[in-house]
Amino acid sequence: WAAGIWPLDFGRPAYAPEIAVASSVAPIQSHSDAVFWRAEERGMASGLTLSDQQVETLAVEGFLWKMTRILTQSDPKAGPVLDTAEGRQTLRQQYERARGYGLETERDLGRYIVTAWTMGIDFDRRFPAMSQILNDPALSPTDKADAVERTALTLFALLAEGRKDGAA
Image: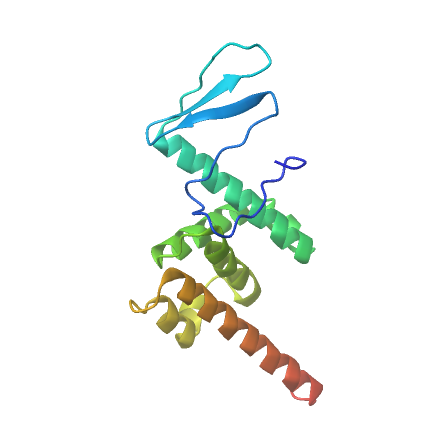
């Protein structure tokens, strides 16, 4: 961790991170049932066991915290909204919806959440093109996220162009 911030790792599944802890504790073994740490400073082994569900919950919460930071850094209005229980619940719901479309990596999930923030939380239902992309079984999760991002950027470019021309 750098200054308490988990770096956004775009290639790793958001639900199964490597867990990093304070400098005095280092991971020594990881498997599907638990994660063990050893206290380096004391020179003696001590362990902490987390279930798969606990590790996944920590990973999801960490990812949502990162997304909150990303959104609040790019949009000052995001902070007051996402700092509420309702805002956090909405962010969690967007994460679950993205997962429901098969998105897995932090990068793909993040692009979905940013699109939801900029286009509206129901963008996947309001815009038929987005619904078609996200429900297309022939597209990989990353292809879906790429297409959603390109479509959103194209829509914003067209809107900006219309404003320059005096329309809208």
